[in-house]
Length: 250
Image (cartoon, rainbow, N blue to C red; front, top):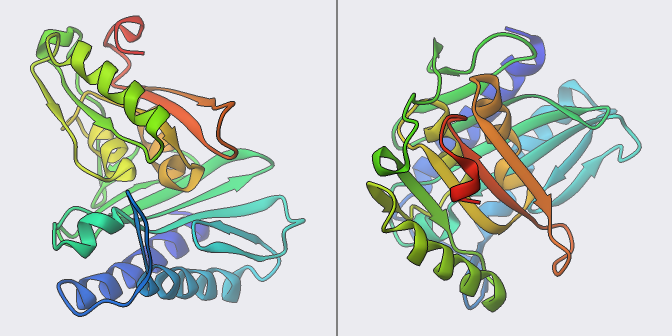
């Protein structure tokens, strides 16, 4: 394991312990939006991760959901989502995670997604297979939509919700089951180990998907990320096990 991945895993686990300690507790809400919630704990968790990373790599950059840090001119950038699935967390639904990825010279190199409630660490290094709790994983072999379990994310704008609803209406009749689970990072982690077969969302941020994209691709899965024209810094994503007919779900 590279020193960078060791740090990533250690930071993700420590952040996960903080989330687990605060699960189903009285939470301070910084902002309550129509389709989202911002917690004080989001900021505290990213601060913890930032401190751990910059203590080892003070010249690196931090790009996270709760802001930036470090040297923004650096070619090494850590992409951080301190709580992916904040609404789940707030409502006491035990499906959320910490996601950390490292991008160097514009290319994703390694990452980790930690689910503190399941104590599952999904990780991928510079080289080698994607792993779950240290054991190699790979996407499913299911090649027909009628066999597939697909998760669809619903973004926060009316435009993206309408598009997602229309896609859901069409897909629901073609696949075995659809799921809406509330965490993009875990959706990708689940594809990487074969629990899910595909994930689609109209608008998503880089910090939600960076580590998960690498997990899926390292195992032979397929991910298409397309910047959206209507919303700055958002992209659409179609991810699968690499065997499903993408033209039928994208």
